[in-house]
Length: 208
Image (cartoon, rainbow, N blue to C red):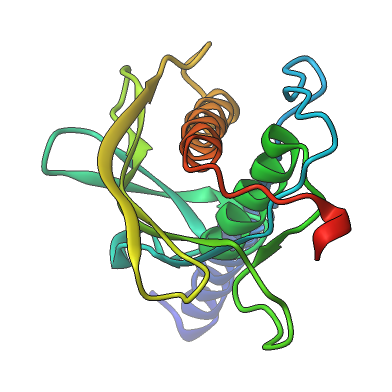
């Protein structure tokens, strides 16, 4: 091949490579968030009695602590999505969602996310260790958590539990997966709220 022909061929390959790479990098990522309980699941009426609750800290497995959404293609194999991502760090989003849910389920405006100001007094603190929060391909979304409720001193354990929350996605895509994960987190929040109410921690706002 002549030197001129080699240059033309090299230029053609470079152009094709550039167009191919441009096409590969042009896809915008799809972003998702977890949301607090919606109005179609109304919170209970607790007759104006409010409890002060601190939510967190929350421990998240390293494999979930990334921007990309993680699913399972098998019991021991994970898939990390290229273009389906969390709009903010999953831990921060999950704590905020749990805080909003507890505020709604408890009928209390005094539910705060970790870390809260030292001057803020809480009646109870919810500590959460996430063991699993994902979906098996073609199966249920699962939130498995070990959690505890501490007293107002932040030290005494009033309750310790571990449980899995399973929800069935209404579809196979990532949007359906995130919605199912969201429902699992909402279900967890409801159980935490019921446990807090069972501990009779609520105090009248007029006494504080």
